[in-house]
Length: 257
Ligand SMILES: [Zn+2]
Picture (cartoon, rainbow, N blue to C red):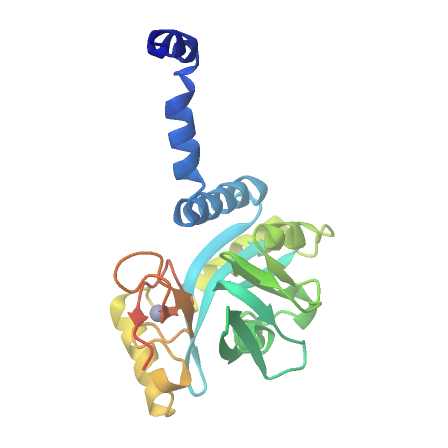
């Protein structure tokens, strides 16, 4: 006796789940998970940090005594000026507040990178002198994005994923008036260098003149730090390469030599 028609008849009512299984399978691939995760964090950040309260200014290059400095995101609000340094990194992150270098680890591969708290300190000080506001009005925030795990206990301003939004929102005492917020935002707009490829190039030139280069982990296109990445597809799948920590603002990649 042939059971095929009976089995088919039994399965048929359940066939509608097949496309869902395929879609869920697709959504669970690491790459898609990463893209959705990042989009979700961006979406939540937009909702939880409304533009009219947390005036956002992105990718700000400011002149300094010895060249220029680049800030990923600034949020100007009545609760303070938040200076956000983003680190789009994978793997395990080890580091302490007072360590000069932190470590990123993907499987057995390790990469040292500059302590982002120190890195952002320069941004904060530059902004502080440009805006002429008291130090306590400028808040440094480190935002790790991407699939990383902070393996060491970090101070509260070192966050992961959506954590930076919650940290920013934890400041609830107004220290500026709405008019001051508008004027601070206008001041930043007026003293920043015009966002362009030329500005980025000059920033890199500045770093080079200070003898910093790719071998020091500096991105050749924007001057941010290069970090370890892992290839997800293609012939190099599973291998490490250098990628700019400014991703997705900067998409520079390099081979590990
Ligand atoms: Zn870059």
